[in-house]
Structures are given as structure tokens and as C-alpha cells.
Amino acid sequence: MSFESLGLSDSILDAIIKKGYTTPSPIQEKAIPQILERNDVLASAQTGTGKTAGFTLPLLQILNQGEQPKNRPVRALILTPTRELAAQVYENVKEYSQFTDLRSTVIFGGVNANPQIKTLRRGVDVLVATPGRLLDLYNQKVFTLSKIEIFVLDEADRMLDMGFSRDINKIIQLLPSRRQNLMFSATFSKEIKRLAGGILHNPIAVEATPENTTAEKVIQRAYKVDKGQKPALTIKLIEEGDWNQVLIFTRTKHKANRLSEQLVKKGISSAAIHGNKSQGARTKALAGFKNGSIRVLVATDIAARGLDIPLLPHVINFELPNVPEDYVHRIGRTGRAGANGEAISLVSVDELEYFEGIEKLLGQKLPTDIVEGFEPTETAPPKTEKKPHSRGGGGGQKRSNKNPFRRRSNR
Ligand code: AMP
Image 1 (cartoon, rainbow, N blue to C red):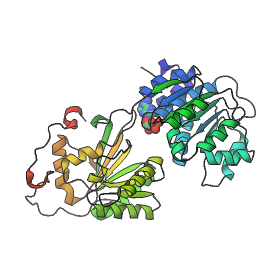
Image 2 (image 1 turned 180 degrees about the vertical axis):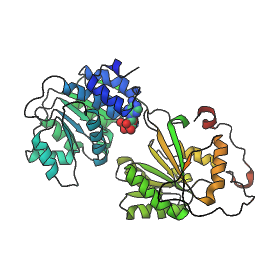
Image 3 (image 1 turned 135 degrees about the vertical axis):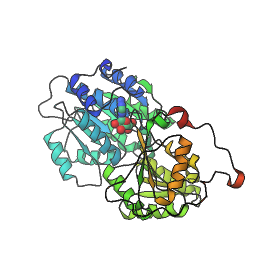
Image 4 (image 1 turned 90 degrees about the vertical axis):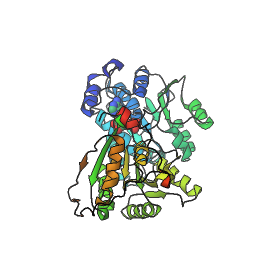
């Protein structure tokens, strides 16, 4: 299946080519033709499935057909629960519309509204917004919603979790009744179904489960760095990469706490989860991580087990596990649609032995690199006979032959 065969036009296809996508993800394959047919769509898809392009590409194509109205009223409204998601969706809209004449912008709370108002007054075709700021600026009569042709409700389940039910209902009342509706949600509770019933007309249901995230989807990288430089390097990677949902692993509870505190001090929202934390604290941290209010989750291996952590684009091994099998569990947490998840290991000289143990288990060499400004200066301690541990203390547990990498990866 190719993007061409889904019915997308040249100006949209050019943007896809520029992005480097070659094949549509399952949700894109299913949703794009339905949206182009102007059907309402109810999609079960979570982050990582390529859902954003799934609704953005056809939406842009529809708006790009025919004459643009002169005064540029908002014709497509994309509602998202969080600022992070709004910003991310807007980035996608901008990229995918770069070869069209369409204008777009994003509005969310917590920042000065004046620049947002200025842009909106000039007129935009596509508006990405969080509910609160949307209602706020609407009430100030900055724009009209009476010309909306397409309404997208993204991450509807998170919207309800975050208490936006009333706002959504208010917003729906402001839209013209003749419009196309697209709703995305990772889960389908009774409340979500009720919400869908009130918004969508004869929707086509489409579904996509996240792609499997085994080795071939994960880019593995290791950076050699001094132990003491690891926090600074972690901060640099997160900030310069503009990473939003980052899972970081440490070996000890103490280190998890400490690193989390260091990140918070630098303005990166973070929480630590480990065995000493109450279930309540862990659940809260995880919920914050999932809803985007916590950007970084720092976890020990044991704490991360059994937690329903979503698939993430970025995992950092702040400290290598002393049990090589744990590395496989850790990086199994990353992955995203069509693209590669990234697992980065920070390796200090005292961990080289662990690193070799991991490479041996994987049956492959991992690419190592040095980040400018973080060149390691520490030298290796004299070699000891100590081998990396195996789980189970002195039990000498056999290494599992069921190693997904050896079987699946040729990287
Ligand atoms: P989303 O599920 O919309 O958050 O998208 C997850 C990631 O997949 C984003 O980084 C997209 O840029 C990427 N992506 C979306 N569609 C494709 C595709 N067809 N091929 C490769 N990567 C994609």
C-alpha cells in the first residue's frame, strides 16, 4: 500500500516524501480514505500509531481543494487535551501543509495570549487548540467557529480524564451542525461512547494497535561519558531533542530520586518510581506521565515491571543494568509507528563490563559515540574477574534462549 493509492494529492504527497515516510501505517491506511470520503470516523488509536498524520493529511487535502474563503475563517478545529500534544499536532499540520497555501496556528493556555490573538485575527484555516484557551479567546470574539467544516477530537479519553467534558460540550454547541467529525481515543469506556454518540453521525469505526516494538523498531545508541557528567548529558539530550515522554532507567532507588530532583531543578518535570514509593504515588506519577504533565519518568527495573507504560519514542539507560536481560526489557518500552524508537545508553567506564555483557546477550555490537563537550576523561579501573550478575543471586540462572534480538534483528 502506498500513500498515492490512498487518494492523496501532490501537494500533500510532497510533504510526506519530505518527511521520509514510505508506507502508510495501518491507521492511516484505514482512516485516510474514509476521511477523504467525508465520513465521520471514530478511531481507536493511541500515540505511536501515526494517528496524527492519519487525520491531518486528509483534513489538509479537503481544505486545500477549491477556493479559500477571502476572510479566512477557521475551517478545521483540532482539539487536544494538553499543550504538549497541541504543539506536536501543530508541528505536524505545519509540516504537512508546507506545499499548500493553508494557514494554521495553535493556541493553548499558560502563555501570553496576545501573539495568539494577533495570528488568529489575520485568519487561519486550521486551528489546533486546548479547550480552555479556545473558549477563552472565543468569548473575546477573536474568531468565529461558525464556518467549521471538520472537527477533530484527539485523545478523547484523556480529555475526559482531565475533566474537559463540560468544555467539550460547550465547544460542540458553537460549531455548525453540518460538519465532519473525527474522534480519536486509545480506550473506549462508556463515557467515551456516550461522548461519541453526541458528536459523530454514522461514524465509520477504524482501529489500530501500536506496531510491535521489537528490536528492528528500536535504534540503540550508546554514549561514553563520565559518571558525573551523566545528569548534564541527560538534560542536554532531553532539551535539545525537545523530548516529551522520556523513560529513564537507573539501577538504584537513590539514583532515581536524585536524578529526578536534578531534572526538576532544571525545569524538566519529572517523577521517580521505585520500590520505596507507595502504590498511590506510583499510580499518580504514571498518570502524570501519561497525560503529559510529567515529562520524564525515572524508574528502577523492578518498579517498571508490570506497569502499563505506553510505548515511548525515547528510553534512556542512565545506568546500565547489571543483569543484561533487563536491558532487553527496558528497550522493549520504546517504539512508534513506522518510525524508530530510540534507546540511549549512557556508559561510564566502570560500566564497560556490563556493556559487554549486554552486547554478548544481544549477539551484536552496539554503536557507541561521544557527545561533544562530554568527552570521557576517566580511565578504566584494573580488570577484575567479576562477571556481570545473573538474576537470581547465586542461583546461576541460565540465560534465556528466547532473546528477541538474536532472532529478529539484523541491525
Ligand atoms: P503519532 O502516533 O501520530 O504520534 O505518530 C508517531 C510517530 O510516527 C511520529 O513521529 C510520526 O512522525 C511518525 N509517523 C507517522 N506516520 C508515519 C509513517 N507512515 N511512516 C513513518 N513514520 C510515521
